Image (cartoon, rainbow, N blue to C red; front, side, top):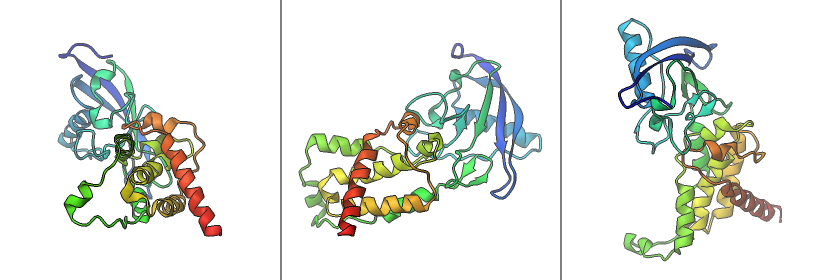
Length: 257
């Protein structure tokens, strides 16, 4: 771990640089000097970019948005681990106190065929959007807004639905999987509606369409190594994958009849 709150450290950074999706990329070495251990990882990159700009160099492109750990935009692989060495946090919530003075830190984008690199550390994760779109809508007649809120849902069911809905779609599960599988993401999106009454009518059909779309996006197959759940900043459970497989099997059986 780093030192006291006032400690500053120096790091060697190896950052993946790639001008565009059709260009060859490579790691470039940078010195990150006088980095406060209280900075977040993204703040450290901000400081690096200020130094690069002031010296006439092109800044490092990386994704970020809320910087509060709730959007998943800050998708980086740090020393071989999606979102870095901490568990249950996104890159923007990773602090520099996790590193020692003089450490070498390797920073690269999420690697997957379905996540093509746009530039440097930025990847295109629109494949996730298309999987969600394939799930379609729910057709439950809820009447007025107040009627929808009045539909009774048991606490146990609501808790499980919320656990699945916690998925922020960052793609760490894909980056951590040796097969680049999107099963944890897809199953979380399927499960959170499968639990509640409003999602019952189309739950099997929804699972079928989303799994088919997932396969069309060139994600790999799930071999249940558990690396996805371990890397997930929201610690989404592998149980969701079992639910997805069950619903997909039901829908496939109906189609064969």
